[in-house]
Length: 324
Figure 1 (cartoon, rainbow, N blue to C red):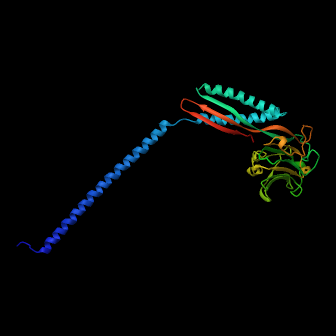
Figure 2: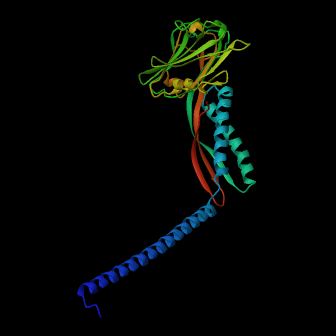
Figure 3: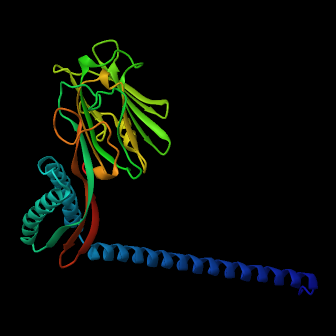
């Protein structure tokens, strides 16, 4: 007998509708999965193609960077050389410097031309400065007038100090820090100091103070010759790294350099300032090498215009030349 119950018909209709919706959801999920796989393949293909294109289009800039580094090194060596050989007048210094760089550039350009490259390094500007030195190793660190506390150099525009080095006779240093020789470098209202003294034994104490707060203090053996080399610019003592020393040269305009208890140290020293003598106050120095601490004209630094060209590369840069 046929089921004519209307409720049975409704249940069958609902079951059919549920199956239809389930099939639609399944088909939709499969379609989305296929779409995601396709997108992933397209994305991977694009990334791979981009990588290939980058590698294929890459230009080797290593020779240009190497040439710029060589130019900087050659310029720094030229500055050192002419400062010690042609230190009578600024025109002579500049002429000697440009001539030295020109000769190096001629040789370097020829070397690069063998490989088909065009290279050039030209002096764009020279910063005239002043070198301060004491080269009598048997003299103490007092001024030319034998003042133990004195101003080495100051100037409203003095803002750069480099190549600061001391070679001290350890046997002549004070015992302890109270009356020890020290250098004060004041800039922007902040004073940084370097103390050198015997530490009560056979070693020498090298202490760095930043505006009244001790930044570092280390002991060093002066060695068989009894001389301790303190290289402030290089940040080392007797070749051992001492980076805190470099904080003394973190200066700006209006820098002042002072020596205190100069009678408690003996040896040699040197430094190069970024202003000519005419713009500085140098009350404790003389202008000739007569055994007293003295000053001479010097090149503080320079800038170069470097170019390097190949069939695939056109490189230009301005580099700063400032030896430590």
